[in-house]
Length: 95
Image 1 (cartoon, rainbow, N blue to C red):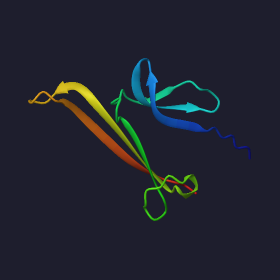
Image 2: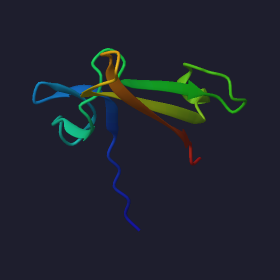
Image 3: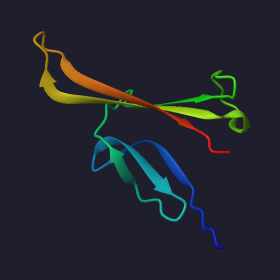
Image 4: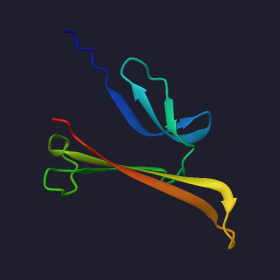
């Protein structure tokens, strides 16, 4: 059996002048947009947790990743504020 792996980096990246949740790969540095456009200031957030559910920044301790994406549409509510939406997903490490 032959396995080929490619590393990807995910984050808030600019694609055609707009902020997106996007990725780049180790084989190509081209930005691949996944979701967006998102809010430029806080449109993409990553939080990392250890096996006990405590937030961590220690790479070897990460067991779970929470990804939050926030968007803003051009629509406004009755008070004139932009209407936005958010989505969070929790990803559990396989190994």
